[in-house]
Amino acid sequence: MLYRLADIENIVAVKECNFSQVPEIYSKCGDRYTLYSGEDGLAVPMVSLGAKGVISVIANIVPAYTSRMIHAYLDGDTKTARDMQIDIIPLVKAMFCEVNPIPVKEAMNILGMNVGPCRLPLCEMSAKNHEYVASVLEQFDTSAIKEFFS
Image 1 (tube, rainbow, N blue to C red):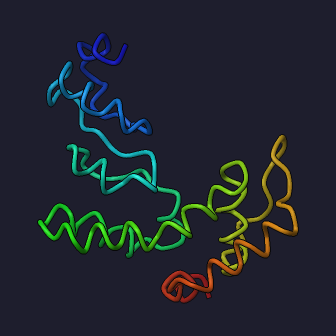
Image 2: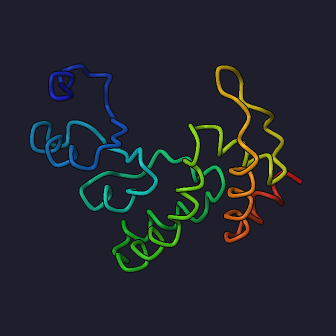
């Protein structure tokens, strides 16, 4: 389907969440599109297949970390990129413990960004998952975000 859109001049980039589709996109479309990972947990593997970056949920919480991780790979430091990808998995899982964007908004509120509640039809996060997200956030350096919003 995507290859049929390749002739439309103003479609220049694609957010792809399905890792297994990336090789097929490149084989059928070449470099016609700039691909971005739409999956935080697969950002580095997607970049290894040619994606130029990630459209990220976790970057709302750890933007510098996310940037360093992608740039490590692009700069040829694959070990650091891989290790960072592995280390961030607990945060990725926490940010998707409920329907997106409920967890990331909860995390931002926990960190003092005061982004408010989700709007309907989304609902408030469960108390159990609130505690889960809060405990995972304690494992990561979120000081830059806290300082920015204080």
